[in-house]
Image (tube, rainbow, N blue to C red):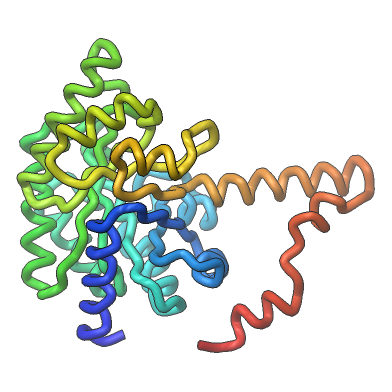
Length: 281
C-alpha cells in the first residue's frame, strides 16, 4: 500500500468516525480480519489483548511494540478496509516512546491508533495524570503530522475500568475532565471502555466536546441504543476472540465428554468458504 492509498483510507476512516454510527470489528489475525471484511464491516481495528492471547501472552504490553506491530502490518496488508491499530499505552511512558509507536503503526499501514492512559510494566500502575497523558497525545499527534497522514487518534480513558474516584459520579466527572483534556491535546475521539449506563453515556457525550467511542461486551446495551445515547463509534474489542475461545472450550468438552460435535457443526465455517476467503484479492 502506497502513501496515497493509505491517505485515502485514513480520510475514509476519519469520515466514518465523524458521521457516527460506526460499528468497528477488532481482528487478531488475517483470518478474523478477512471474515469481518467479508461480512461487510466498513472498517477494522486490531485488539492488542486478542493478538497477545493468540501468541501465548497476557495483555498489557507483554508482547512489545515490534511484535505487536508486525501483526498489525500483516492484517493491514491482507484487507482493503481502513485499519486502526491498538498500540496499548504506547510501549513506553515517555512521549518519545509514544511517538515511535505511532510512527511504527503508520509504517505498518494503520490509519488510526488507540492510545491508553493506563500505566503498564515499568511505568507503574494506575493511570497517567491528565497532564502526562496530554503530553503523550501531543507527541502522538506531532508524529502523525510529520508523516503527512491524517491519523485518527482515539484516546482511551480507563477511569471507569479502574473506578477512578470515590463513587460513580466522580468516575463520570473525572472521565469528562480527562476526555476534554485529551481532545485539547490532539486526540480526535475519546474511548471509554466499561461505560454501559445509557444515562451516563448521554451526559458524557453531551459534555465532552468531541466524538465518543464505546466498547460492546456481554451485557452492554445494543448498538442502536449506544449510538442514540451519543456514541459515535462502538467497537467489539477483545470480546470476539474471547467468544471464539469459549466456543473452542465447549467443542473440546463436548468431544471429550460425549464423543459428539454438535457445537462444532453449529458454527462450522466450511472448507469451501475458507478456501475462497484466502484465494486471492
